[in-house]
Picture 1 (cartoon, rainbow, N blue to C red):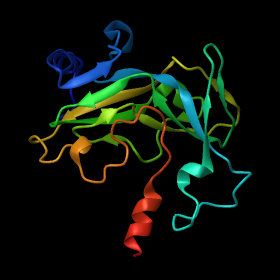
Picture 2: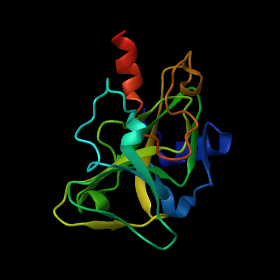
Picture 3: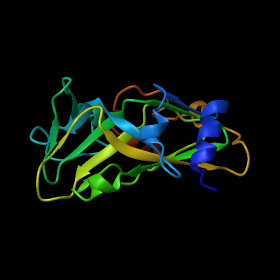
Length: 194
């Protein structure tokens, strides 16, 4: 069951959902979601330096990307067809019986900006700054400003507390992240081919 605005407020008050810095509920809370803000760090591919991504190759995925820090008041320009990883300003912590889902904002979607390709679920026990998979599907460049509302989170109660919360899961890849991290899928692929 998706939490309503009333239940999101209760979960924030009880600590089942923790958002830091605390949200301005008058501005950020919707009927069944809460908006989060765009951080200032972005990770982009060095596509002119590498011909392709090889998950079994010698180059770690992180080396294929570079981090860009956008100064306060300046914009990150998303060209048509661009892809970038970014995090929210806020740190999110979920209880062991709450699942989070990241969604795009309709106003940005109407400009061609998407905030996730496939990774919409944040497992119970998630701790860290949520990463977005930003893409520009539109035909015009779009200026994105750190601090703007960029995404909406919805929350669902799972049937019971999970046995292994995400932050305690063996081999979790992204727990506690503070900046956008590159894919760590190559570790899985290399391990499975041994």
